[in-house]
Amino acid sequence: MATPLTDSERRKQISVRGIAGLGDVAEIKKSFNRHLHFTLVKDRNVATPRDYYFALAHTVRDHLVGRWIRTQQYYYEKDPKRIHYLSLEFYMGRTLQNTMINLGLQNACDEAIYQLGLDLEELEDIEEDAGLGNGGLGRLAACFLDSMASLGLAAYGYGIRYEFGIFNQKISNGWQVEEADDWLRYGNPWEKARPEYMLPVHFYGRVEHTAQGAKWLDTQIVLAMPYDTPVPGYKNNTVNTMRLWSAKAPNDFNLQEFNVGDYIQAVLDRNLAENISRVLYPNDNFFEGKELRLKQEYFVVAATLQDIIRRFKSSKFGCRDPVRTSFETFPEKVAIQLNDTHPALAIPELMRILLDVEKLAWEKAWDVTVQTCAYTNHTVLPEALERWSVHMFEKLLPRHLEIIYEINRRHLDRISAMYPGDGDRLRRMSLIEEGDPKRINMAHLCVVGSHAVNGVARIHSEIVKNTVFKDFYDIEPEKFQNKTNGITPRRWLLLCNPGLADVIAEKIGEEFLTDLYQLKKLLNFIDDDTFIRDLAKVKQVRFCEIDENLVCRFSS
Ligand code: D6G
Image (cartoon, rainbow, N blue to C red; front, side):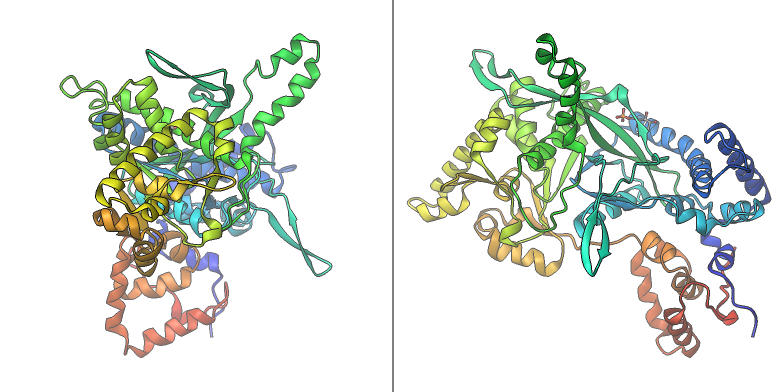
């Protein structure tokens, strides 16, 4: 019996993880040493394992930069339809290993780090998790970003750069206790702050109706500062962007207080504005109705829509199209996917911009909005459905409340015309729930304001059509779809279970890594004893306990 291979040794044999060419290895070592010296300002006598992790992360990141710039240039040149995935959660996890795999650099890095007398797996373990999500909804958003980049689609993830992600769970004296997830404490080598793209977001204030249209006045401003993270596709040279917004107080925040002499208080109060992006709400499937959460939801939507419209206006076929009227082409160039109702304010916010800023007529603005937005429903649990109090909206987003009322008026007029005298149906389908307090049903807003609505599993999509949104399905069945949640086989198979990936690839090749349907080919081996034995073995194996018979025989 030969000595079992370590996981790290096994990884070196696998072609899908990249071939460790001598040139690559030398270049990675050089770059690693350069970053240790110039970026970390350390030498090998004083460097900590975390310094080594950062030196490697910067080395790998360098390989992304050219591809990232070229991908974005290409999008500006070709002006394809862009997909914007809006989500209050992106559960990205760790980045280093995934990036090495997608760039085909893993074996070269493994070898370089080994030659430097270090251990790659040890360094990988130092990376903090980007835990900006609760569970399935946030991980779906992350898997979609990976998938869209791997398909070469012009896609953007838009969300919030929470300073504290999902809490760490500790068990203390037999009890579960939560600990703050200070994931940015040591810095994040994968993000790039973009202060040059900082945008204002307005809250509170009042609405004035003038001959020139509605004006939202006397608002409080919070700035949204974007941080860009590269999202590499799997071995296709595409690098998309995830843009997460961080709240910054404007420099004149609470200056009135400064004028009356309390400069220190004014500076301390800046925290109030910046609290918007402080922490992820750890509520999975439960609606709490807190004002800070509503602020988060509007914050991401308002900053994102300004960004999308800026890009649209500068695109070839956007507002610069001389033949078509402005914004007519918007839905041909812009898709906005709402990950649950959390970013639902995109609907009234897009309406506000089109009506009050761009001066479109209501019908045109509504048509553009509906054709642009699509909504993914994640749950039918009543306690999870977002129903914001009208009172809170009146205070925080008065213009949006007016727009939602008008959307509802037109929607109910239409239902009345279809079902005369059916008051019960009107009550059931209204965006506004009467009662104390009066509430806005955000799921109804999403269904009415989108051209497509999907559930995330076949049975779930059936329930959506037959129960929660039945009245809506009755009038517009073509809107309703199913999109069963998927996962990326790169992270969740190749990266998480390299042994299993090897056994599969040995039989059917590597195509399943980009086309999971290929796994069907394994049915041909259902009676293949060696294959079944290898599968059974891989299920038993934890990390490095592996039999020499399982050494993978990948083509290189
Ligand atoms: C990313 C990569 C960078 C590019 C930028 C474009 O930060 O190379 O210039 O995105 O941002 P937008 O102008 O598309 O927002």
